[in-house]
Length: 493
Image 1: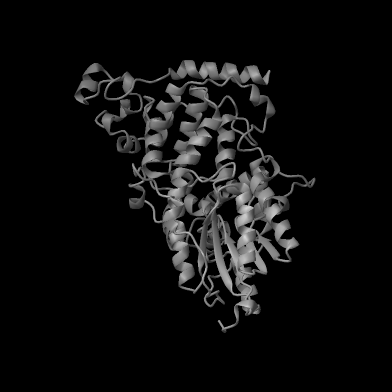
Image 2: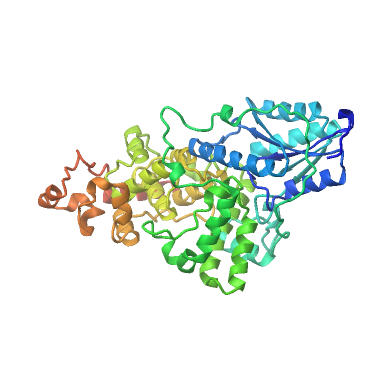
């Protein structure tokens, strides 16, 4: 950068949020172009840890964020760009902090990618209004979705409430823009800046470090996001429609946490997959099924935008009358994987140990909480939000409402997963259960999904004492199913 007096320097800010990547980042790219055109407007990057929103990052998500910010810092540093880290103490503090930084550095332009939750939209609007009143240029972009929620419309011009036609429409629309390569040269701000240390944000758990096993499983970097996508397209995608339901196999992409923090964009996934199809490297039908899961995430944001209360209120209003049970003992047993139903317990333990859970098992454990235990879906949403490294406000809310039967395109109220048959169908050799529920691992496959049906002799040989070494079922599934159906019918009537 050409040396200039401080009075002549008016930095350009890129405000990173849930878009912690340098490639295919529309706001970042526009900020770079702005800084390149105006040599006196060099680029500086900003990230504000905002725990004042209605849904601040959960514990596991904050672990991921720590490492994602470290990776972003390194990627920016290689290009000469400084990353300012700040921590907000209140929603007003975010506004004041952004305005103060812009004033202190004599900023003339700021860029960010849009967010879609109600409080985030209100916050951004407030900040934009204040900055524009100070004659600061504000530019926002779509960096998180294939299409903006308001762009995807039904034939009558309204928004979608059912996924399948939404999926057909978004496929037919084509791409909204081309992929943006990672930048090389950047006109970067070189002056001194005040920044918090990453460690001072206290994103990592301590005393105890319940996430110590995460680093053996996850590599929260932008580079590894693309490596994971490549590995998936080189193998598992070709049997995706079947293996995606098998928790005993690595049949899914496991890209969800990278998507959640924006280390890879849905457009990058879409285009890379489409190119693999065109090259004849992957089965088109299988890959299409995979892309429909990317579209489900899009649909979730579509719903969040048009139904701002999605994370806290059922879309079907009559569900507010559902007779939810308040049972702390049952909730705790579910959270800790001590329900006595092996596939449920395996899923909840996988979640705690890895920060992630297989999607089929997510549906099983959610159905169990809601329909076997009659516990409010919002309790499950809250637990997932805190324990998932891929915590995503739209997907989490839409998926829980889908299982509960109170959301858009919801699972029928009478669809109640049988945890035993689900385990037998999708974990046929019980490899998944044996991995996460080792105390019953010596039972034969016939009984491992329903250990209470095993004889005393078999239990003794497997060194199992139900109620001591492994819990007895906390409910009778048949009776629980009847109670759930009665409750659902009552509110519908």
